[in-house]
Image 1: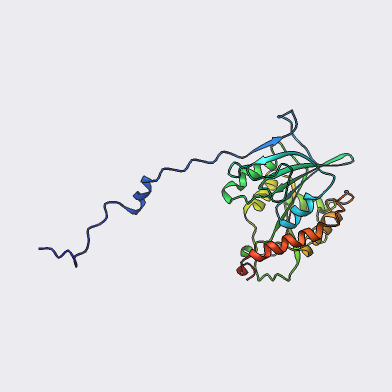
Image 2: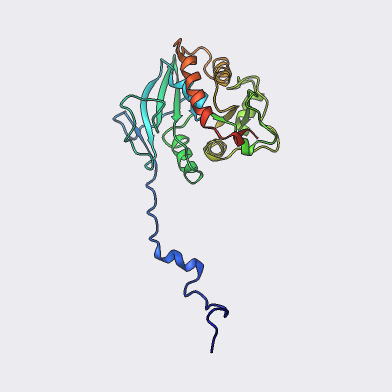
Amino acid sequence: MDDVVTDIPPPSRFMLEDLNNFTPPSHPLPSPFLVFSTLDYSKSFHPSLLIIAMSSPSLHLLHHLSSKTLIGTLVLPEFPFSGNSVEPSLSDKSCNIYALNDSDRLIMIALVQYSVTSERSHAVAKLLIGERIIPERVLILDSVQSRNFRGKLSPDDIFAVKLETSFERKSSDTGDSPLIKGLDYFPSGSVVDGLAAALLSRCQLKKIKGTLCVSWPHFGVSVMSLVKSLLLKGALAGINHSSDADLEDEYLRFSRSKDFHLDSELYT
């Protein structure tokens, strides 16, 4: 007679991988898409410069530019419009696109105010660059991700570095003014991933002059002042910018609220 206590139990009726057969497959997410205010839905835009802002300092700074005009938005279906304000706000989960007219040239600005997953990064990059928006040059503004940076990062460090496509670097060698002046290149051994990497790769693929500028830390008035200085000396030189006296005070309050929730391991 078998000993039901000590004998090895019989194998499960199901293999581990078979257990997922009872879980209905998730529905694929709808593709992201662009919506423009122009009535000509087939119109393409050919700006001399496209600025794509993702870092907190660049979003806060460019959101307050007084001379920009809202012309469209990039809709990512996993982020519903519910909860967004009627007027554009930094608290919205959105990606609004603006036009910034500077005499005879058109500058476009995309403010990416939600976190784009790696799986969706290439689809978003494809919409922003090379289809209906065909820029001559692209400037991408993001923050350094500590997990990808070779070396330790201290919250007391304030810096910005850049990466460029081969076409941007060649144009600088032939006399074109760089979009961001006086920056070192991203240090060897460090990497960039996510949407920023997808956007820069898209520029390289489409043979567009592209620059990625990443700053550290993620929040703070000092790093916002650094980004502002870089833009006004380079890509936005001569552009009328907001003179809101409360800009730095507002961002200081915003930075403190964000820093309070940051995990201390971020800086190790």
